[in-house]
Image (cartoon, rainbow, N blue to C red; front, side, top):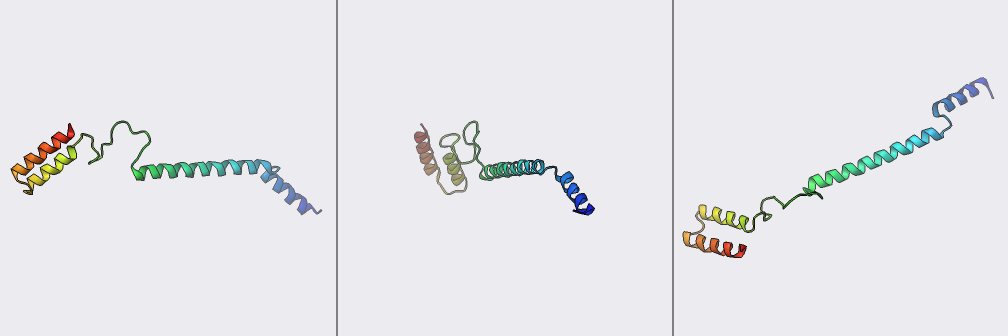
Length: 102
């Protein structure tokens, strides 16, 4: 073995230790990256779907029935305001909605 080979061999050992420390860190950081990507994926899916596992209270999105019959009443009011319903039709349908809500 030449002097160059001995220096090269000792340089490799100094850079990597005995080889096990570097591998242990590689496994640790690889696992850390895998966990991070998984958590990021779960967060993105939940954010894009608009659902959460810890919702407190009723669903408050429009048309989801926070107050029973409220969305039907809103639609009825809009149609009446646009002239699609006569006053008599409006009152009949409003009465029906109120009866169904009770």
